[in-house]
Amino acid sequence: MSLKKDINVLRRKLMRSLTKNVGSSQFDKNVDLTKVKFKKILISRPNPRLGNQLLITPLLQEVITTFPDCEIDLFVNGGLAPIIFKNYTNINRIIQLPRKPFKDLTKYVKGWLSLKKYSYDIVINVVENSSSGRLSAQFVSSKYKFFGDDVDDIQLKHNDYEHIAKYPVYNFRHYLTKLGFKENNNPIPNLDLKLSDSELAEAKKTLQSIVQNDKKTICIFTFATADKCYSESWWAPFYDRLKAEYSDYNIIEVLPVENVSQIGFKAPTFYSRDVREIGALIANTEVFIGADSGIMHLASASKATTVGLFSRDNINMYAPYNKNSVAINTNTENIDNYITVLDKILR
Image (tube, rainbow, N blue to C red):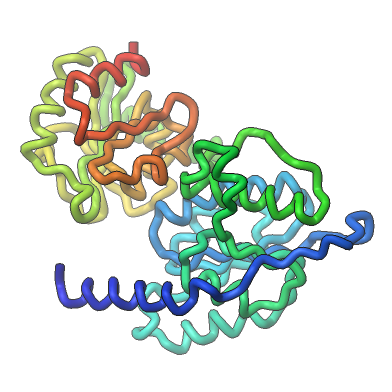
């Protein structure tokens, strides 16, 4: 690990230890719901990663379903949010912190100060151990503040509470019952990029230009960060097996921004820096296969059947989920098991 990464890890640990007790969720049990209008809501998730921002789309949908006329402000980090949430019409304002605050300190300070410009009916910190999220929830003016802390009663009730996209929704529902709302036991919304018909149609043309036939397509993504990235020696036999087992399918590889391939560019490829273009292309394929990464969550959010490959012990927290999607623990399963999973999807 580099010195820079060591410093960042130490900084995050320090900030979490300093902020873990910042704020506590606030409820007024005497509130008369007939006289309260929940209109302005702030959702705080100041993390720049693609996956972590996509993982708040279930909460966004839940909030909008609960309060259809609400106006949502997002407090985020980096420049992806306006692209990811482009078609969420309830979003009013996106407050963006620079990804590297010390390189743009003025913008960083303005981002924090802009939180004070408005008062909110509800503020939601999405992830409990986010130091910036907790501080932002404490900083803003709002009668009701939800800090995202784990709730033991919910953990006992829902065996999927650990999932990082689901527990914020379970918490939100729990908080609302504290305010007198009726308990909501509907299924948790899936991740959703809200791709438009025109985006999907254009991506279908792009896919056709790549494969130039009428066969269905398997999409693979062979990259990931750090130790989540499988080696070329891991991918080579798996790719060969995919070709042998599913010769009646096209196989294409979506490339990362780094423009590298763990199979040596042996498959037809698609490269784009536009996450909506990538998502729309994946949505036109039969199945997406890739390691735990932002692109894996993008595949889920595009509503594609997604097979996530996990070498870390965080499957319960980050597994892809939507219709037919599945996570595979590659430490305990082998290629034969992977094919068995894919057979259930493709045959």
